[in-house]
Image (tube, rainbow, N blue to C red):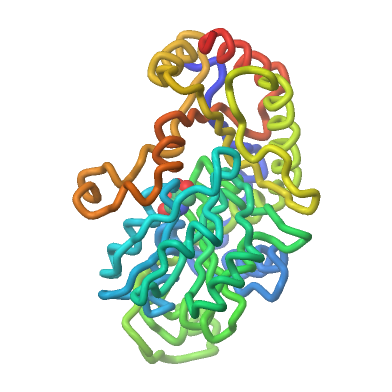
Length: 377
Ligand SMILES: Cc1ncc(COP(=O)(O)O)c(C=O)c1O
């Protein structure tokens, strides 16, 4: 149907062979591939990150809030411009999400200032999202959280491989949450990773992942344990071996994939320069590396996004929106203060996401920008 779809998997025979090898191994969950994936991901992040593979990014967020004892009566500051999973996870543990606005029409991330404005005596934690793969200002945000005694969760769903001065996103907060949903930079289908620098916190996350149990089936199979204790109520948010096998192959492809995304994003920026379309995160500091998860543009005021999306569709180009304002959804509309986030509200109403994936060609980018410039004109 599409000449150029929003996203395509970067899969080949390696993912295929890795899954079959996992199936043929006779051990389907929480085995050596999970251990290898966690170790390799921890090494990739560096900075002493302890990684725990989980079922998906939302599970990682839920576990992070539980591990930091966030619950009823607490407020958690989250970006207004994000996927609803952040708000849902806060609500699911009985806490209240509070919106922090974007920094500017160029920097769509939350800032220390936009977070600080929302702090009250009930604020327990902050969740930041490195939107589209662009790192938030972590020096200022970690300093603020330290000073105000707030826990910091990084939602790194968009940003595996992004870094600031050589330090990877996902190593700045108390706990970091990654998603490996199909359309992410590292695609598994369903999958996630939760990481913590603190070993005790990481141990708590491992208990939460698997029923609060002190040993795994593999430990008992290998004779390292005969039984187990349950140290606190936990969940089953485990990942299986087939997914870990895909994750290992995809992790290997991530650095080259992110570099190709960067080259494509630069081509988009060149092609759209001087047009009425704005691409955010212009002029990044020299030591900041983006993971370029998605390619967002801002349509001019008064331009009908629906009409532009229809014209792109007629040209065979798929587009999307990141994100519709979640505070307008039925579950949230009576409880969120939309007036807290005027910039995010404006961006949500004008944002358009264009195709971006490592196997995209330069000619594909030219076709998309040609169709878009025609539509906007
Ligand atoms: C910013 C953000 N947070 C959280 C999630 C949730 O991840 P998952 O779909 O793996 O549960 C996503 C994924 O779509 C996301 O984009």
